Amino acid sequence: MARNFLSHIHAGKVSPQALKPTITFGLGVACLTCMAILVLTGITLFLYYIPDQAKAYERILHITTTLRFGRVVRNLHFLAANALIILSVLHLARVVLTGSYRKRWLNWTYGLVLLLLVMFANFTGYLLPWNQISYWAVKIGSALLEYVPLIGLSLKSFLLGGDDVGHETLLRSFVFHAGFIPPLMLVFVGLHLWRVRKDGGLAAAEFSDGVKVNADPWLYRAEAGVAFSVLAVLLLLAFFIDAPIYERANPSHPPNPAKAPWYFVGVQEMISYSAMLGGVVVPGLVLGYLLLLPKLDQSTTPGGKWFASDRRVWSLIFLAIMVSQIVFIVIGVWFRGPNWQLVLPF
Image 1 (tube, rainbow, N blue to C red):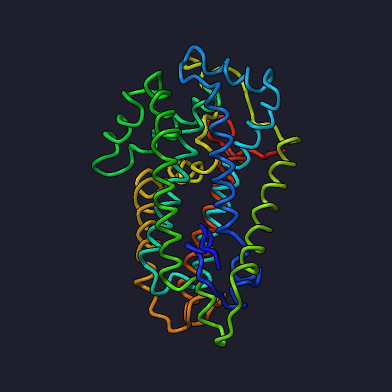
Image 2: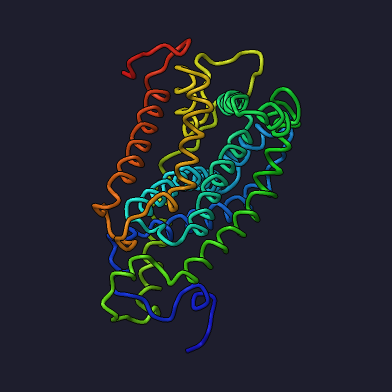
């Protein structure tokens, strides 16, 4: 059989169990598809974008209203970026709830790094339109860094290029978003896929009865089906859901309330109750729990089984974290009004 790229990142044979949609829901392939879409649409957008305070907003308007298919390309980039965050978290949840991190701590760590890079990529890209909402969202989001012990203020100053959001922030955001994060993500995606192959494929294979089928064509067809489905859905949505433009950034007129990007507004909501607990203790405990989970879990059930009884405690802790963060995000996005007062969203 001819060797190609796919045969290098996949084993020659796979367990039929690994092909069942309910094992992985194709979330890993869906994430990779979103990344590919972001790279292709990002390259297209950067051909016309200028990271300059005086020109960035007009360039976004030019791309959206003047260029042929410019609106669709920008919408697709926007939708893929948001979908990637959601799909990455769902992929993390799938790995936890099936115990697929067992004996795979190194690959689990690569996955966590990728999740952080996805969040950072979205945060740095959020400012590039230089509109009122993105400007103040990044201003609030960067202020959350002040609660990081020891290095918070220095980290904030480094990312902003000074004490406040300005031209240097826009330029650094562009450099991080376009030049630094994508190649770094490519490295960790490569490491992640290599470790999956090195560890024997999907954890679901541990439940096989020894019978295996050829990866070509069965696994390749399944992955292609997921990839084209994700592309089709996002492309269809791109014709009907517009990436927001808002008005030009105005540093002298903050919106009330000023909110962080939706994926960080949960932390902002927690900080509104307690700066120390919401900004330092809880995020630190969550990150520590995720990093150490493969070491803490001493269950004997092989990875790949959903909601194994001997992993119930760890699964419940993870679900509690997930549900609480979703609740905080919902409150922060829809139930917080002027002066961060609770309001009804309708």
